[in-house]
Image 1 (cartoon, helix red, strand yellow):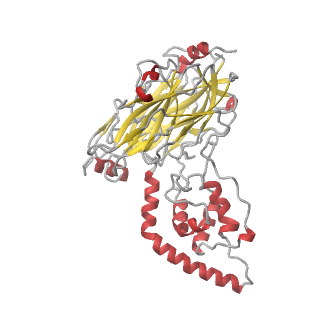
Image 2 (cartoon, helix red, strand yellow):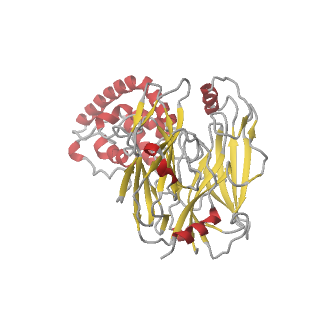
Image 3 (cartoon, helix red, strand yellow):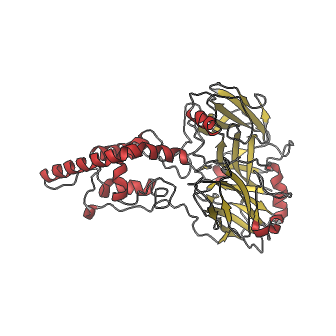
Length: 494
């Protein structure tokens, strides 16, 4: 059996760097798209409902005139299977969607809003795109995008007045996408409750939770899911392994105001993160994360107060899936850019007030702490994520082969939206995934719009009481910026 000690020593080839607050994944609850949908529908709901009712009556009359055949497309025969497959995972009662879509009665008043949002690509949310400058090496898992024919069907349904159809003719429904980890081994929750309440104008708080998974022998993790406690205040979460169990000494398993770090002095390895709507982390077949006996997990939780009084979180935790079988590949996560390891190609990050299409670039040479490592180490890239703040508008990461000079684009998010961030997992067997060799170069390119022509910049300024752009530098605040690539890397040949 492979010893965990040898695994940890070999992992130093891709040793993770320290994490600053708000570093990885989304730093908001995804309220951007949800709010726009809600706002647009709030003024349209009454008129849409009235128009839909009239149109439905017309469709019914037409159906009667044609011998009683139900108008198509209709809910039971056409729309319900599509909605169940692509929407219901989030649009359920108590879910992150602003309204449920589990039944005809819940869905039909929103028919026009749904058609509008799918037409322009706002829903289902997905930002990893193939472009003229980027063709990723493979497709991505869990891609929820609709085909042109499916978008047209939703538009036709709305234009017809969202007819219900005949339940006796209902098409079979697929299983809705689940946000739960299948076949979990164990679930462990926070040890004590936390209260979160606004303090003056301060709404954001960073607290660390120590989770005891009760591991008595080394295990190999291939699945991990955040168990959401109070969804109203969970903003985002970073997940670390505390292999020395230093956090076990925290009173009630909590360290308040731990900033963007782990709250401990010893080493802690970042292994995953969570934002509302995130799917569970599930490594590819043959890839696992070793967790040593006695380790604890630290959750760095960004809580965002509602402003409506005291909220309580008493049930946030983790669901795990593990085995005692060593994997073919061992997975780690690597963070590059600003902040992170890499060379600044454009100098210190600074976006002048009023600047549009401002570019910042970073590059990292694949190495072991600056030293080459042998090609017997097989390093494969299985997931990738981008991170900027609200001034960002476009980000691209690529790898340049040390031998051929060929550049392979890994991920492009040309319609950057701070409110929708995620890890993108390549849909390919790990042995066929992009290989990283010592001497390859990973390059990051971030583009920013620090003008009033950028609605997200206007929103960021308003949050701090400003109405004109200011110079933006690297940092963790609302009007600071970052340019980060996060990479899931699987290693073999240790």
